[in-house]
Image 1 (tube, helix red, strand yellow):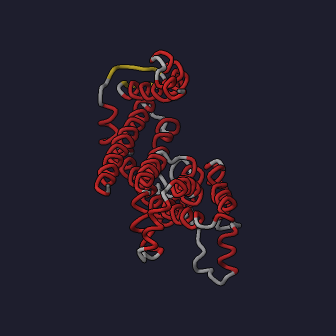
Image 2: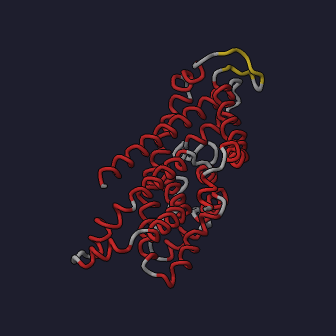
Image 3: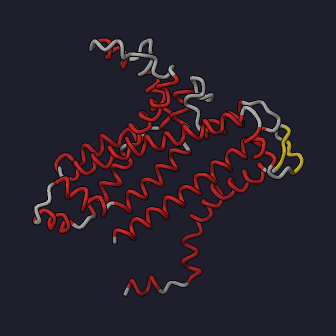
Length: 306
């Protein structure tokens, strides 16, 4: 009876319940997006808007220095962050969720422990790891020397060959609790009779995981992958804390959000608002476009398994 009454709610009443969320979305998402797009189509002198220039800011972004060289480098670093998150963060998160799913006594305790870094501000996490990895007084290098591995100790954030991988690992360390919780909830909702039937057929634990559990988790894996891509492309606090606004050393930790921040606030260019808005629009288009492609591909794979 109650279900029928809910289904029969008039459209104006249903829209009324959606109005607060729609208003917040419009104010904090749609309006800033529209404003950035508008700003990117004009030239600026400081904070004074000048003439309409169309796509000139985008052309300058891809053809003039330093943007022409910094933009591909920053985008490549974001792509590496995403790849590292998929390989390390999401794989470890799925493994931990699968292991903890079978150990009910300690499941809640370890879920809390693994999720705690995820609840801390990324900026705080970045600054803490910069202290831990300090070549002068950091405990990481001190522990390596104490174990007789002094040759491995090095300035992790001062070497361009290692700095970006430190950002990848620190990001994965903090965010591993996110896929762990998502996969844990998904595992708890799966039909256990499927795995029991495979067990009766003689399938090993590994075979049950690869041929029964993993295919049923594919929709969740797709969702986590898309969200991981969005988070990786929007990465700012940890790269900023570990490498500063310039992506030190030598731009090795530079990412798209740092390029936007540096262009808008540190470049000193008269047209900083126009160029930085163009960076934001490019980043938005990439995120939306790739997310849509990822979603369609995962849905196609899901249909192929059913």
